[in-house]
Length: 68
Image (tube, rainbow, N blue to C red; front, side):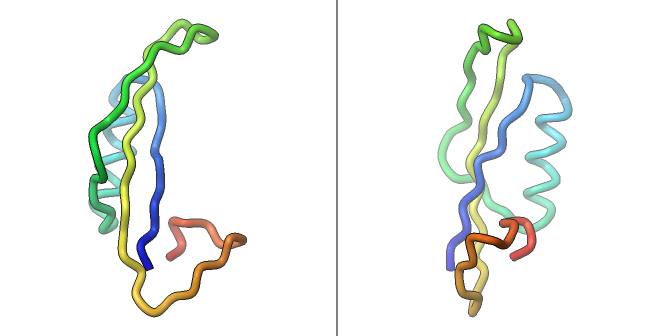
């Protein structure tokens, strides 16, 4: 099964650390990152999709994706 997550965060080093951690846990980058202005917080926000293969595991919507 292919698992998909979309990581988001403020445009700062903590977002880069979030993506780096996902990569170190076996997730792979999927597509290009996104970048947008959040008018409420008046800050830039980043997003990056990541995927990972979880063989021989049925999908369970109650399970956290990081637990696969």
